[in-house]
Amino acid sequence: MSTFPIYRPRRLRRTENLRRMVRETRVSADDFIYPLFVVHGQGVKTEIPSMPGNYHWSIDMLPTEVEEIATLGIPAVILFGLPAVKDEVGSENYDEHGIVQQAIRAIKEAVPELVVVTDVCMCEYTSHGHCGIVRDGYVQNDETLEYLAKVALSHAATGADIVAPSGMIDGQVWAIREALDENGYENIAILSYAAKYASSFYGPFRDAAQSPPQFGDRCSYQMDPPNAREALREVGLDIEEGADIVMVKPALPYLDIIRQVRDAFDYPLAAYNVSGEFSMVKAAAQRGWIDEQRVALEMLTAIKRAGADMILTYFAKDAVRWLATGQGQGVP
Ligand code: PBG
Image (cartoon, rainbow, N blue to C red; front, side, top):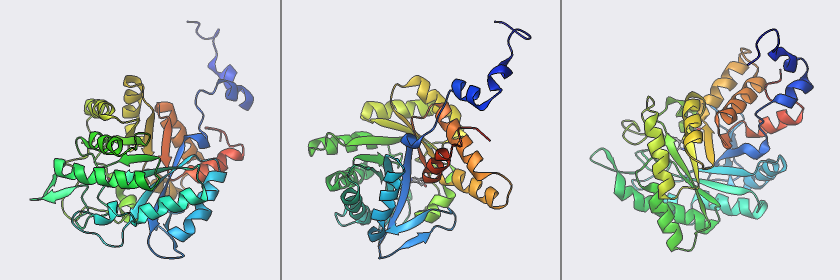
């Protein structure tokens, strides 16, 4: 290796065009999956207070929004639904007229080519706010599987392209793959929230989805943040169970996990730049403490550099616009 003064790393940092030539990571619209929160009612476009620039959408308002998303070149959305009524088993979750089912139909009618991913989980739909069937204060594993399979099947039957189980229930990918295949939906893909941590970064989302657990926490199913090797086991299991895409969530505090999964598995890898990661940037930017645009693009670039192929992010629409203005990655 040639060292100073023979080798001067600054030579290739001298101008923007030189930097562009040696830039190793780029983010673009292709990388993004944009989350949408859908609600009952008419004419609803209500901003979520803890997530500026994100809204609760009623079905009639969706076509304009998804047309804009598609025009920006974003290939996919992921849907989260707020049901009319919550109960012990989250019935609306697998109702053919449920809020997410209505949203899938509306989106597919407006923009058929937009990829529709659905979050398959129970917490938004259950009265207790947990991601499964609760008995004796414990989220039952195998009993929950039947419900998750029903939900995924209902989403697939309505036109979803990808179902994304997020409850960290053991065997959920297997249960869903089996149900889909038995019913002729072998072409519907599974994006598994494979390594999802019991993170405090979901705070603003729980406001948005009105899904906080009504007692206890999610530590008996979501992963313990200090664990890394366990994430590799979780991802390995989900791939064996039939996951097409695996995900690490959250993204920023878990870039090491993204990198380790990228190196260990040759599968498409998603990362979820979660609500807390988003809202921290918004809040600091509102106070003038950081530059939202530059910080957000730097974060998204870092997630990609760590090894993610796709990023679920509330910044998606703005990021595409910023990138289009010539703001490159990491360019101040
Ligand atoms: C549902 C779910 C959650 C998120 C995505 N799907 C919340 C949770 O696990 O409590 C969080 C997304 C975000 O914070 O942006 N299980």
